[in-house]
Amino acid sequence: MKRVVVTGAGGGIGAALARRFASEGAEVVVNDVNPAAAEAVASEIGGLPVPGDAADEEDTRRLIDTAWAELGGIDLFCANAGTLTAGDESTPDDVWTRDWNVNVMSHVYVTRALLPRWLDSHEPKRLVMTVSAAGLLTLLGSAPYAVTKHAALAYAEWLRATYHHRGITVQALCPQGVRTDMLTRGSARGSASAALLAESALEPDVVAAKVGEALQGDSFLILPHAEVAEFYQLRAAETDRWLGGMNKMQRAFEGGAR
Image (cartoon, rainbow, N blue to C red; front, side, top):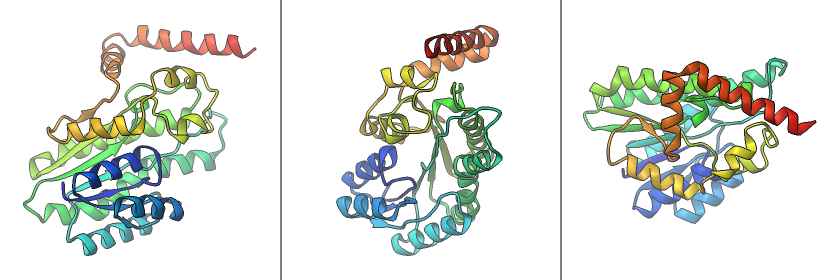
C-alpha cells in the first residue's frame, strides 16, 4: 500500500499505523482533529498533515480531495477516529449524537466521498475501519460506545458484502484494551470494563503490526486479542450464558464500588 490516509492519527493506534506505513515506504496523509498532533506525527514520518474533524462531512471530503490531489490516489484508507464516553440510558442526547457522529457517521462520510472514486478504478483498494471489540461484544459502563461500535461493525459488514466483488476489501479492526489516552485517561476510566481491559492492553505499535499482517490477506475481522474470537463465538452460540457472565462482572464492579 503506497498511498495511505489515516484518521485519528495524532496519537494512539492512528499514529502507530501512520508510523508503520511510513516505515514501509508509503506516502501517508495524517489526519486528526487536533492540528498540532497531526502536524507532529506528519513531521516525524515525513507525511502530509491534513487536520480536520472526521465527524464533519465537509472536513472529510476536503481530506480525501487533498489526499487524492497530493498522492494521485488512495490505496488504503484507515478510518480510525473514535471517541469513548462513559454513560448509560441517562446520558444526554447531545453526547449520544456526538458519539454517533464520530463512531458511525465518520465512516459513512468517508465512503460517500471515496467509493465513487474507487469504484471507477480497476485497482484493488482497502478500507480498514477501527471498530473495537465492543462492536462484537459490548462495553460495560458505556452504552454510547457499545451501541455506536455495534453500528460501526454493521456498516463495515454491509460494505464488505456489497463491494468486495468490485475490488474493495473492507476490514474491521476490533482490539480490546490498547494503551492509549482513550483507555488511560478517557472518561470511561474507572468503569466496570476499564480494569479488565487494562490487564490485557496492548501497545499501539503491536496493534499496528497486527494490521500490517492482516493486510497480507483479506480476513474481515482483525483481532489483535485472540481471545475476542472465543468471546464472540460464545456470545453467538450461548447468548444467555455470555450475558450472565457480563452481568456477573457488572455486579462485582458495583459491589466493589460501594
